[in-house]
Image (cartoon, rainbow, N blue to C red; front, side, top):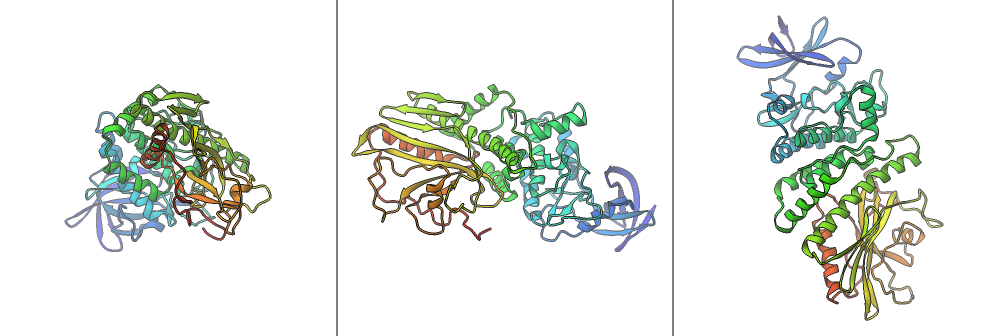
Length: 494
C-alpha cells in the first residue's frame, strides 16, 4: 500500500507494533526508511495530531510527515533502533545503575521541557525509543495540554495500568506530577528488574497503586532509592518536579560514594534489606483532611530516611556513641556531655497559627533536631532547629525544610540558654515569617532537606555534636547565622 501524505509518498510495509490508538508499520520513501503510524478515525484518536510539533522539547521522536486517508490519520516518524521494553527484555535482571540513570536523565529532560505545556499521561518502556543515541519519548496519543481543563474527549480513563499514577486510577485531572510517578515506576523497573506493583487482577493492581508502598529497593544506593521512592509518593504534591529529578539524577551520576559515605550507604543498604513493606497512608483524597493525612505519610517516610542516614553516619564515625530510641523515627545520640536529639514527626494542625496572620505556605508535619549540653558552657546549653514539611518555596511542592529562630535584637528579653532555637508552627513562628516586624525572626534560612543528598546536613550536625562533646560548642557569634531573607514564600508570591 502506498500513502501520499503532505511531503512525500510512502510505501507501507510490515506491521511492527501497535498501541491504544493505532498500528505502526515499516515505511519507505525512496532511500528514506521510517515508520508510519495509522490512527483510525475514531472519537478521540485525533488527539495525537495535536502534538505533531513540540518545538524546543528535547528527546521527543519527531514527526517527519503526516496526512490522512479515508479511514486513518497518518504520522511518519524516524525508525528507532529499539524500544526501552525491547532493551529491558534483552538484559537478564536489572540494568546497571549507571545505564539506568543515563536513560532516566534523557526522559527527565523531556519532562522538564514539557512541564507546563503537555502532560504525556502514558510513560512506559514501550513509548521510550532509542533514536540517534538518545532515549526519546513517543506516542502522545493520550496526552493533553497541561492547562486543558475540559474537552469533548480527554481520554480521561485511558491508562496503562502497570505505570499509572493514583490520580489516573481515580479519573482525576492529570498534572506534570502524574508523569513523574510513571517515570518512577520505569526507574524502579530498570533498577530492580521488577515492577513495584503487580496484579493478580485489575482490582488488586488498582488497590496497590492507591494504597501500598513499593517494596524496598534492595541493593540500590540510598540516594537513588530515595529519589525513586519520592517519585512514587501517592500525593502528587509530594513528588519532586521534573527539574529537581533531572538535577538529582545528574548529581547521582557525577558523585559516587567513597570513604565514610560509602560505608554509610552500605550500612543503610543492610538496614533497608531488613525492613518489610511499609503501609502507605491513605491515598490521595477528596477532602483537605484526607489530603493532609496522605502528605503526612509521605513526610514520615522521608523523615525516616533522613533519620536513618544521619544515625548510620554518626555510628560509623563514632562507634562509642550511645543511642537511645525515641519511637520509630526519633532517637538520641550521646557522646560525653553532648546529646543530639532527633524527634519523630508530628502532624501539624491545618490552622496552627492562632491569632496571627498565616504564612503563604502550608505545613503538614514538623519536628525538631537539637544539641543539648549536660553542663552549661557560660550559660549556653546548646541549639535547636525546626524541621517543617511543607510547600515552603513552591506552591504544591512539599518536602522537609530546616530552619531556626531568634528573638529580634531590639526586643528586651532574658538571655536564652538555647540559641538559635526551634519553634513549632504557631503564633510565635508565624511572627517570624511574617512580612512585617515582630518579636521573633528566622535565624537560619529555610533549607531543603533532600533525602538523596544529606551531605551538608549530616556534616553540620555531626560537627556540632563533636564540638559539644569536647566542650567547644558555643553561642553563635552573630545572629542570624545565615541570611534567611527570601528563603520562603510570602503573600503575593507564587
